Image (tube, rainbow, N blue to C red):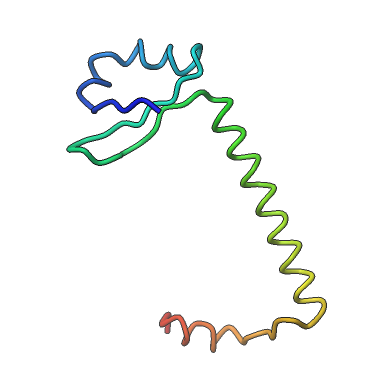
Length: 87
């Protein structure tokens, strides 16, 4: 992944966007040496979102299976809030 500063991005935004869109390059945008954001081809982000959706589905299924088999005990909302310091 190529690293560019915010100043470099501002000065070459069209070129960087074209390199990401058509050259399939990824860029890490930094400021003061710290990563702020990434620019990547839209296909990459769509793939990441699809993977996240699949993982969410697996976790949801596993949670339902655990609940159905009694592996996890239900906690009353009031108790959960107290344990999380939300009350």
